[in-house]
Length: 358
Image (tube, rainbow, N blue to C red; front, top):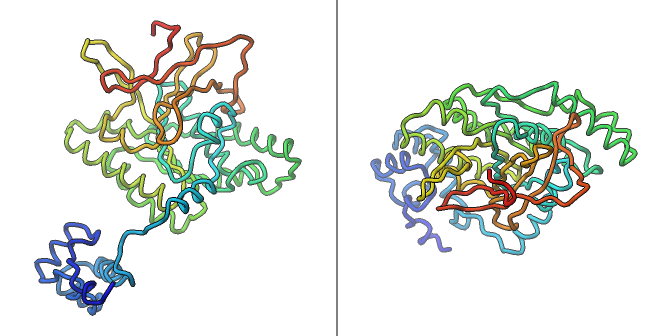
């Protein structure tokens, strides 16, 4: 790209926040050439923006090729995806449903009624992400953003001890350095008691991760809690949700880690007036997750199902599981059982048991 073309490029074509672009325009900085030779202090003073913002603008416009969008070939992306090991769940059934486990570089939503195991699955992932690589883990750390006060350290201890025992037995590993103390030290818990704290927490995550680059999992349990109780203004609720969703997707993709968000269920009515249980938060949030999973009890109430209702790369399906003292585990059957199926009624996503009236 020639220097003349680069210097004549309009500032408005760069991914600069609108508020900063407005100040640059007002100060007469309309093209790359008008700012590229300035020092950060000069641009900051002339445009009345912070020194940090000025430095960011100059870094952006001074890129050698004049581009701000990273380009990759489809082959490069494929190899990256194949090289990303997922986070196992300790349930082979669920792992098979997700093609190996919860994927990195993606946002995964886990929905379900109260008591079905959403938090249990999240705690399990906080442990398994730390397993040694020889055991199928990532030897990574986890962030747990708790909005409901649901984080349970004693429950985590049960799961940790079971995982440690599993690794030592199955791989004949001593794993002296992988113990309950090290597991708990590598889970960073943020308690957010209102929606403003949740938004602030999400927006500072990238800064936190700069000094905690071993984090491979971010959990929010749950996203819906504050939005369903604290925000009556629908327009504001939609804007805040969109901002959180965009930031979570950005973090997952750029930092190549897994983001897992739990969601509550709500009842929506179709055109015939029939109610359907569906994940809460509507379309403001619904487009963000790459994977959407609904957890539910089997009609027999003896075990539970994880049903994949949305994925860009995998077919819908269901996997049986159970929650025991050791954590999330498989369930075996003496006879054939009928799994739930993913459905969409009048645009309302959900699941249905063909052998049940529920």
